[in-house]
Amino acid sequence: MLHRGRYLEFRIDTVARPDGSLRRREVAGHPGAVAIVAVDAEDRIVLVRQFRSATGHALLEIPAGTLEVDADGVVEDPLGAARRELEEETGLRAGSWTALSRFYTAPGFTDELMHLYLATGLAAVGAGALPPDDDESIEVVRLALHDALAAVDRGEIVDAKSIVGILWVARPARGA
Amino acid sequence: MLHRGRYLEFRIDTVARPDGSLRRREVAGHPGAVAIVAVDAEDRIVLVRQFRSATGHALLEIPAGTLEVDADGVVEDPLGAARRELEEETGLRAGSWTALSRFYTAPGFTDELMHLYLATGLAAVGAGALPPDDDESIEVVRLALHDALAAVDRGEIVDAKSIVGILWVARPARGA
Image (tube, rainbow over all chains, first blue to last red; front, side, top):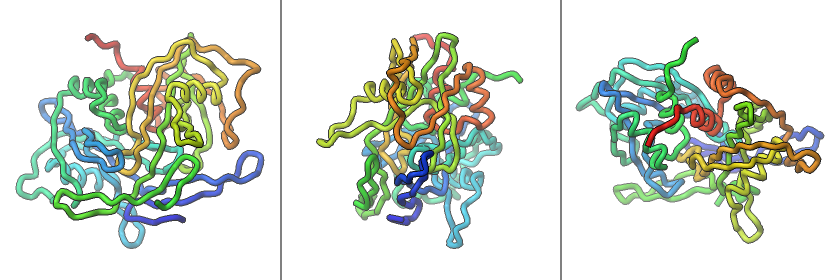
């Protein structure tokens, strides 16, 4: 174990190769995360723009956040985290929640599992909005689905969970 | 800097908040990566199944890999890396390459940028195939697009780059 931080732990795992020999693997241990495709009554997707220090850029993304871990090591329920993050980042609550997908963001080096939700029936929380996390300065942007797809194509939306979420809701309706 | 490994570096960055105060951020520094949606003459997508020690599971993914960094710190060209990884993991070369997208896999804590390509005109390399990386034991699987989409829906394909790649090529043809 190299470091155990607020959200992440950095460690070196020793993994057996098929031939029985051992290899060291760098792993970023992560409690998991949530991301939300929030669609309003005008079929617009709610996005947030914020500076992402790891990348050095401000990114336009769907609302998202890391699962909280309490002092006893108990990890937050993903749906509860999704409700919390949507409200914190956009000031919105949703009347309807649907689990769309779960996926690993970067399975080559982290166990981060992203829980993706669809949120509809949006209503502003108003004066009761939670304060944002202390280092989050967030601008909320709403884009029609075709504009969100165009932003993906132009490279203006450039993170995996947001592209998955937007492409997912843009899929043609599926039969059985 | 906590650790500088073969591919990853683990470090703690200090970031200024909007109010001027400072905050520590855990960052996994990464040279970038490539992933390939390889589509054969029967419109099947070429996938690879391999054990991913960070997640504890064998995952079914599109071919992918990390950009190599030489002794002088020069990072490999992404298209060259895509050609190398496709051949290493599947024994295939492609006659046509198209850049589809670039995206951050997990911008909350890593700068890993994934370069996504479409590869067509596939041909087996035959006896000249490169040996796989020393810890990679890989099974190659070909799925028709609708079966790949079904595998995404069933949670059998569960990593972000593969879902992006499959949803991307499944998008209806777009006008200008």
